[in-house]
Length: 163
Image 1 (spheres, rainbow, N blue to C red):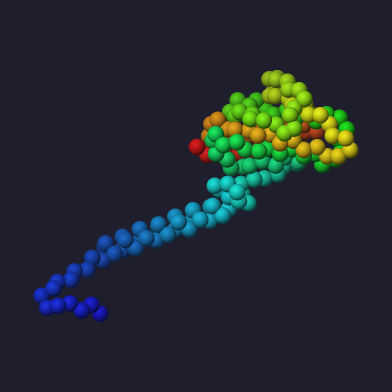
Image 2 (tube, rainbow, N blue to C red):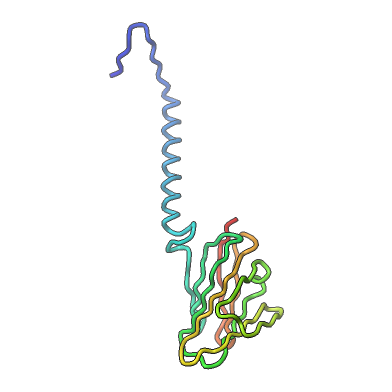
């Protein structure tokens, strides 16, 4: 019960209280949604942010969610022992909308074609090979990159690039 001194008027505003309650509920929902999205990896580093696809004997791991002008890693591993050189073709769509910062190990040879850029890496003796491509997106949006291993198969990588 509200106690007032004699002569003091207290007015209630049920419409204001109802609107303020709705505003608080909406703000709490937005805060909870932001925290859950962060835990899930929407802002990077969570279980939604990266994925692995298999193309024949290749295993490709990349970030589904990335930021523009921030380098991302595309890791390619062979699941079998490779004796010869490993040839990977990165589609023209990826090369045109991003910059290839570097490859680890360094490619022995690169060849440009209509389909994209083919990288040739020296073969490993007696073990699976691993190649890391460091790519920096130049634009933002929803993208589907093409990726091909010579004699192995082709895959499509789906990625969301934030501004």
